[in-house]
Length: 409
Image 1 (cartoon, helix red, strand yellow):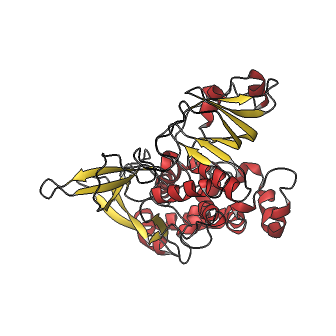
Image 2: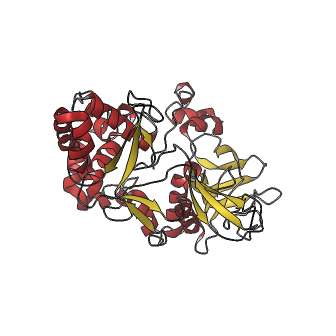
Image 3: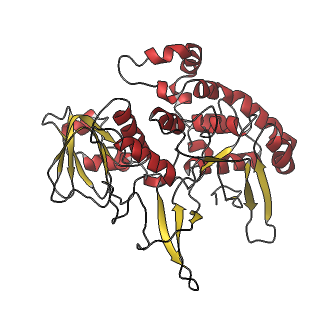
């Protein structure tokens, strides 16, 4: 449920990741294992991921060490291993990869027949946009780039159900349908009225400035370093448009489009709806959610051919494909589970990251660098060198910043 005045909104499905509850589906198989079965990651399996926390083994040496096997860490590792030929080591505290997007299995037994059935649960995002058809989102672009774009089967939906004031006398149920004018002529007209319809059309028009660049410039064209502009030259027109908007709009929150100066949403029902939509994206209200993410979803939900996507087998099937992308080939790249990172190690002068130290005492030498996929609030505890903290934007500060959970993917 949202914390907005429209407390009635109970999301059974959302356009991009949400966590209102677990989503389950069945795989009828016979299993002789315990209730925590997973054929890729189970302790009894033969995979190199199976329960190996590195305890008692020799230290590692990799090209790139990655802290955390969330979607970000797995995408980075899969790209570095597959496209750049780097030996990657990903170190994850949990016994399953995926971070907030991991899936887990439980085995249930039929009391009458004795048949055992595996139930798979998604713990985090359950629906995404832009994976089944172009324009592809960054996640699908990564899967394509590592040669596993067709490995996940995407199920398409045309909308999701909403419940207002659940379990109350005034309970109301309706459906959000995707596509041009369907939402505007349906729920928006019924509950918000003509004022909400007008404001929504104006909001769509003014936020298209953020969408044009996001749709036209693929995430895979983004680079760091001196040559960053070279792959962007083919999208020069869209790039110029984004630059004109400035960093405050392109990287900031949706607040300027809710409360001014870019636009002011006055209709209360529309404000509540945008907050509910933002909550499904980030777990935050619209004014604190990424403006680019909000603008893209407002565009994508109401375009011709719009659809919601859900991977057959749950989001765990996407995680499995990313893990395979990290470990494919002969570089020796590996996702190490149950491998808690105790510290990110630096050179004595604090100018270079050189590796990791795990909780079990094992050290990891990273010849080319370290990527941290852990929350920003954890970094201050992972880095002990004060010179490094000062170099990284005075990293004594994040401890004072409120820790806000978000699951945008």
